[in-house]
Length: 292
Image 1 (tube, rainbow, N blue to C red):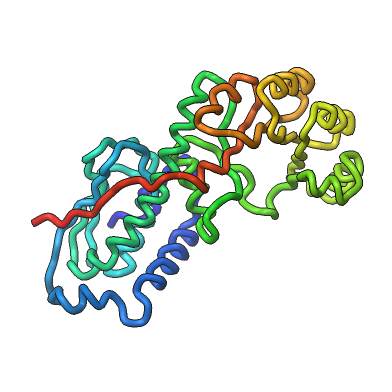
Image 2 (cartoon, one colour):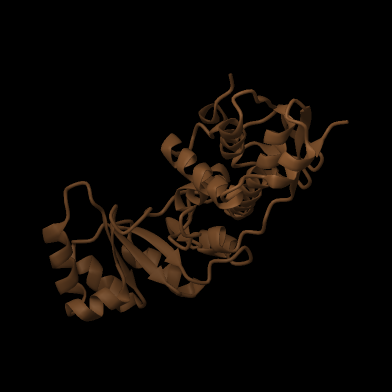
C-alpha cells in the first residue's frame, strides 16, 4: 500500500510525526463533534466512489503526503494511485492522484486534502519562480520564520520542494543577532562575545548589520559565521561582498521580491531570505473530481 512518506520529496525534510499531527489537527477542526453530517445523511454507507485530484494550473506540487494521510486516516479501505510525487512540475489539467474507496471517506477528506495541497503547492510554485530568476548564480533563496502558526514545518518543506533552502526553523537552532539584540547588549563587539561564549560548537552565529561600517566591525571581531545585510541597496550589497572578501557568508534580507531577486543574486551574496515565500504565496488551484 502506498504510504505518505513514499510521496515525500526525497531531497527535503518532513517528519512523519509532523504529517500525522497536522492531519489530525485539521480533521479535528473540520469534523467537530458529529462528523461530516452532510455525507452521513446523503450517502449510503456501502457506496463506493472514484475521484481524481487534478491540477488546475501549472506549477510545482507539494502536500501529497498530507492528502494521502488525510484519506487513510478516515478509511483503511482507501486505494490511491499517485501519478507524481512532491516536487514534481505539473501542467494545468494534469492528474495527480487517483482515489477509490468508500464515498463517505473521500467526500469528508476532500476539503482538508485540497487545503494542504493548495497551500503547500502555492509555496513550492512561488519558490520555484524565485529560484528560476537566480539561475547561473551561486546564491540560494531561503525562507524565514514568517510562516503560518502551526504549519512551519510543512511550509518550510514546501520551500524545499520548490528548490529553495531553509533558514532556521525556530529560535532554538541557530543564533541570529538582530538590531534590538545589539542595542540591548551594548554593541556589536559585546553581543558577539556573549554569543560566542554561550554557543555550542555546532551552533552558527549570524548577526544583522545595516551599514558597511557595522560589517567592518563584525569582520574585525572574528566571532561571527554569517552576516545578514539588512535592507541594503544593490550598490551597497556589491561593496559588502568586496569588503567581506569571502570571509563570512553574506545574506541579503529586506526588499527581496520577484522583481528584485535577480539583481540581488548578481551582487555576489551567498543567500537571500524572503518572507514572501511563505506569507504571501497564492493558493495553488487544484480540485477533486468524482468520476461518474
